[in-house]
Length: 419
Image (cartoon, rainbow, N blue to C red; front, side, top):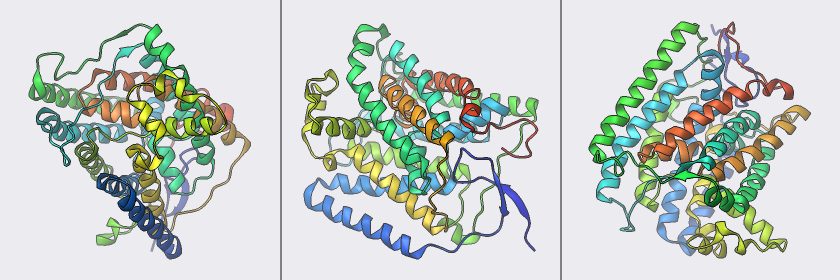
């Protein structure tokens, strides 16, 4: 006998829905075959035209996308649940992910381990007006757009139709942000980049200890707040059992947290920098703008080292390849669970996605990255800006809780049975 319970839908913008908690749809074999064929063709093309590292990054992107979708590992929903009702389950999974990441990143960055001898460097960026404004805007945008940068990609892979709108305006927003970036970084005040490892005298060992202590403190604070607010639990996900759970259903958040940290470390050793997403959006948007006659090459953003990116094929851009992999990996995960389905677009979520996409895109450029590049990658790289990003994005999330209902988007309530 099966029971009916509220479970998390693929669409974060909707309330949990009732369905048989033990049942999964049959695998969508035709879609799985199509996804594997596209992945194989892209692999062959990359092997023929690019350095082998691009092929490895495509594989890592596939695994990242599969993991994100399989666990519905969210940043947007995690921030929203915590700021609205005090549920910190997903936030604690972030802390585990970051703890594993700094443990892996510390020796890689300290000794320069890499697969191709190109050297490695973390994401360490300045703390200033640009970061503060950008992270706050991004926090608002991801709550309106229905997903963060990684969430946008994996939701597209799952067939969530409105996220194509979010992605389009994310690209537009980050392109505008690239055009405006010199004003924010050169004319607005900022401190020099601060690394807990190299700017403080702690070294990577000391920075690792401080980081682990901070993650433990944050996890403890979420438990205290959760208990005080008697927060509703996260809704479960429909899943298979036994070995089938590896391929169908859902993974526990703790498993996904460890997997994402390991995959990010492998990305660092493969391309020399951590996982990122939004720089590719700026590249795509700028190339489109250039196609329509805009003098993109004269923008300050595309001077220096970035100039070569603008002149090269997008398939030479490692972040683009990772993004393609994330979408394909999420598509395969959704099809394996029989969950791929285009969803309804309403006037409310359409306009929320337009506004949210623009804000996320613009904010990501100002803040030197998104939830992946700035928050995950920054903190894993021992950069102070990653922590500041998280605080300001949480503040933006709190503000956005009052804006979501204007677009017909739900907000968790303390008397909900699950959130």
